[in-house]
Amino acid sequence: MIVAVELAERSYDVVLDDGARHQLAALLQARAPRAQVAIIVTSPLLRAQPWFSFETGLIQHVIEVPEGEEAKTLGTLGRLCEQFAELQLSRHDVIVGVGGGAITDLAGFAAAVYLRGVALVQVPTSLVGQVDAAIGGKTAVNLSAGKNLVGAFFQPLGVLCDFETLATLPERERLSGLGEVAKCWLLERRRASELAGVSLKDLTLLSVQLKVNIVNGDERESGQRALLNYGHTLAHALEAMALARSVDEMRHGEAVAVGLAFAARLAHRLGRVDGDEVVNHDGVLAALGLAGRMPTTCSTGELMAVMGHDKKAHHDLTFVLANADGFDVVHGVDVEVVAQVLEDFRGEQ
Image (cartoon, rainbow, N blue to C red):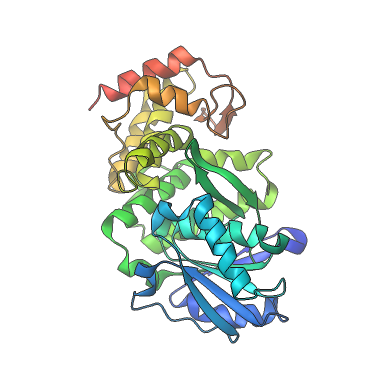
């Protein structure tokens, strides 16, 4: 299955297949014919997986970075670029990000800033990477103040989504990816009852097609692409607070599931949707095995403060919210209403 990202001279294909990683050498020969060196950026755990086998047809190096969100720091970015320099990576060479969303974010941002731009190929190995992070050119690292606050738009030469890598995912990582799948299912205005019998491959393809269709019309998030942030205002606040305590406390998709359930309740309180939509959101999350319930570790006051500093906010509280016909980016949502809905949502536990 091939989904085309159509962005003029920055166009590329997203390939979804069993064994897609084995297409890397052919992709590099076609898209980076002057490259002599390929540097694969990955983690120690991924490098030890049985599927970790890559042929680039070039002089090949592997650089290991920390696991998960620990990779997404300015310090790690700096060390990675120093290693590029030691290996004499040139502007004609290529960086290959092999990993989940955190590693593809890091590798993509490093490719964007090293020598002001080095060719990039993404090989996302997690579900969240395949359906979201590796596609569309958004790259970033975190600051202590929040998620993804330092980054760049930088499109790859191609994305290879290999279904074989998903077979070795820990259950928690699979569920985390399903948080982004749930977002896409809901943005497509689909019902929980329609999920019965839908395969993971079909869910992945649906999510990729939705994202690519939106990115093709809005590469730099000036309009419709912002809808892909559905559920993310609360999710990023939850993640930022959890990361301050432990990198293992909350996964991205777990936070997105909570954000989706909350967004449905906020839209209902504002009179944008009826109660059936809240039930449908909860049903989609439950069908995918996601809890979608507020953690007890974050107070309403703390969450309100962090949400106010989210990068999608414009000096006010901004949410993507459902309406009767679709979704809108809504600025200036009443602070007291948001706080009350958070409190009520917490009380549902």
